[in-house]
Image (cartoon, rainbow, N blue to C red; front, side):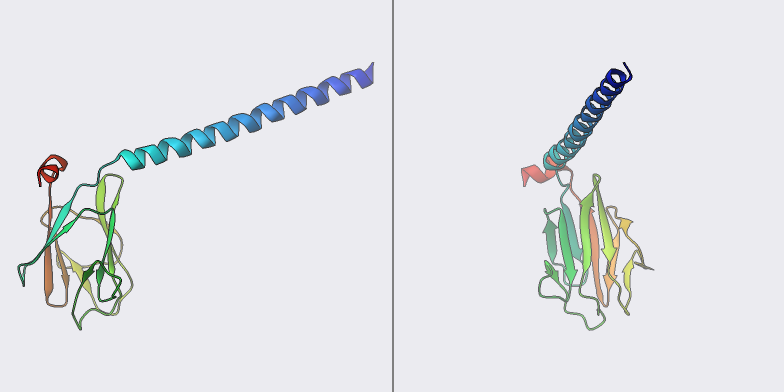
Length: 146
């Protein structure tokens, strides 16, 4: 009698373990899949970087760009005052963010040193050396017209 009870308990334990593992894998897959479709479906709100010194206009459509003196940067800066390889602009959680990598020279966002990642807004000014860029946003509907 006791061996039958032990066998039944083992079987129930094994079945409940399999049900737990299958549900865990299902929920992990479902969460991963829903985040990837949300990411693919989200539209990046385009921004303009207007160089206030030269008057040049740089339009950003990508989810991430690099600004700096490195050759790999999307927007290259010819400034002796900039020693870090780049500053990163990226689109995350429906907002544009800026992140400056460690440098002995200052990169300023609205005349304040860029020490940590920040959400940027239309009208913000990004300064490195003598170069000043004004950030402007377009709405998604306006950018589709262009």
